[in-house]
Image (cartoon, rainbow, N blue to C red; front, side, top):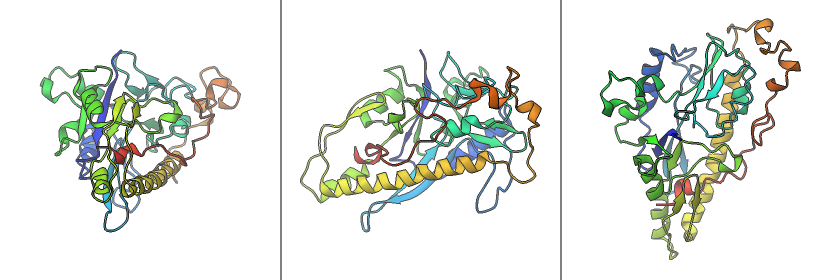
Length: 317
């Protein structure tokens, strides 16, 4: 079965936000739009963005590294946002694995935002519905577009080619080869969500450690979503890895916090009438079993950030 996905190379991403602006530009005028803005020029932008870039530092001076971390929906193969939806608005397409939201069915209950452990859901306060990355589904199948341009807007806009797009289930695709050769890593695999999107780790972290240690680092042998490491890092590299884990744990904690904040109604925002918030079965959210969050391993609770196994995002080359 086809599973379209993105692979993002953290080694060459420069945090220019071209992916963010191109995504916003394309989707606000496409079938997914408009994408509302509430405070676009304030210190805490609260508009709808399908793609966001987080920037932070890892390591200790003078061996610090700046990491730019793009984040969007990961189009999980076992998406926890789908089974919690009481109306079936959130669904995963069988033909290409893309996770979408049917705006006509969405009642704005925000269960999916609470179920998503990656903070990838975006609630549109003006429209009263949940939105998210669509992998530009209206663009990648547009026959009027030249085949070489049938990619998500973020992929075409990236000046460093840090974003790859293709079928992650096809072993001969560009993204599958990149995952094998560079040790691609799925975020938080212990949750069982099986994210389709993956990340390529920063090679500079191992290089910094190798300069000050004698241990040898062996490239990863990777099967999709299940990387295995053969060697050990030097003490310096291991310290950088521990620092990156701490920063990423803090990052994902922040992402979940922001997702929860976005899931709260803003002052003066459109409020869905109680009648519209009832499930299709007529029992209402409180009495409908299908309305209760029941994602894999989530039980309606967002997982803790502690123990995030993301070392190889930064520690393999």
